[in-house]
Image (cartoon, rainbow, N blue to C red; front, side, top):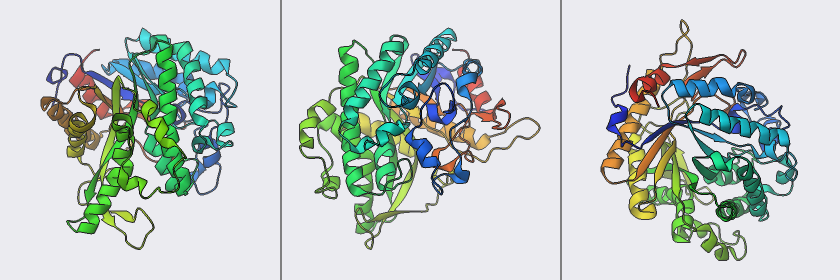
Length: 443
C-alpha cells in the first residue's frame, strides 16, 4: 500500500520530517541525567501502566546514529527532537557536561546526514528538584526555564534550523495539573490556572533570552483537538465551547491577542496569579513560526452534575486508533485554516506532530501497518487542502520516528514508523516508513 501523494504535490520548500522526544526514547538512567518529575510519577503505584519508566526507553542515547541513518534512508528532510532539562541540569541548577556533550554530538550527527535539526527545548521532563519547588505552579519557573534555554542554545543553537520553546503547554498544565493524567499528577484547579499562565511566561522569558543572544527562527508547539458537540442540544454546544476554550484558545489567544478566553477565566476566578495581566505583553511577542500538533477530535457533552467545566467526552462514531482516538483529518484542515484566518496570519505553520497508535505485530519480519498509511495519507491530504486555501503550512513531521514510551500508557501503544523490540532494541521499519520513502524520495 502506498501514499496517494508525491513530494512534488507540495511546495518546493516544504519540509518532511519525523519527531521524537527525549524522555520517550533516550533512556534516562545514564549519561548523567538526573531524575525528572516523570521518574517520580512513574515510581508512584497506579500512575503508569505496568509501572514502566523511561529508564532505558529506546536507548537513543547510544543508538542515535542508527536512528538518524534510518531517517536519512527514508528521504526525510528534518529531525525534530527535544533536549532533556533533567539531563542538561540534573539538579535544576548545575550543568551536566555529559548531557551537553550528547546533544552536541546529536546536532553534528544530524547535520552530517543532511537533516535539518528542529529542537524543542521542553518536552515534559522537568527536573525533580524543580518540581520540589512547585514546578510549573511557581512563577520562578519562567526564569529557571530561560536559564536552561540559554545554556542549551549557547552550546547547540548555532546549528539548529528551528527552535521551539515548549511542546504542548496544554499537556504540561491542564492534563497534568487539572486532570492529573500526566506528571506531576495533580487534580487542582488552582495549580492548573497558575501553571497555564506560568508556562506561557516561561515561553516568553526564554524567547527574550534567545532573541537577546541573536538566535532566530523561534516558535512554540501547541496541540489542538477538535471540540465536536455530542449533539445539537444547547448544553452540549456550550460544553464544546468551553472545551475549545481551555484546550485550543487559551494559549494561541494569549500569544496573538494578549488575552485569555473569558469563558475559561470565569471558571478560574480567584485562582489566577495576581497581576497576570502585566505579563501578557511579553507573552504576545511575535513568533517566527507556530508548531501545530493534531491527532483527533473529542465529542463533548454537558455534564451538569460535575464541577466546572461541567463536561465529559463521549464515544463518537468514527473509526478509532489504538488509543481510542477518532480518526478525523478534517480537524487538521480546520485548525490550519482557522489559525491562519483568525490568529497567525502569514506566520509560517509547521505540523510538528501527527500520527496514530496501532496494535502492530511483526509477521515474518514485517509490519504491514496499512491503517497508519491511510491515516498519514488522509491527514497529508488535509494539509494540501489547507495550503491550497492559503494557509502558510511549511512542513509536516510524522509522530513518531520510533515506537516509544507513551507516558502514562507505558510501552503498550506503538506510534512509530519504525518498530522497536524493547528487549533487543532492534529497529524494523514498518510499511508506513517505506511508504514515506517511496513518496518523498531522497532528501
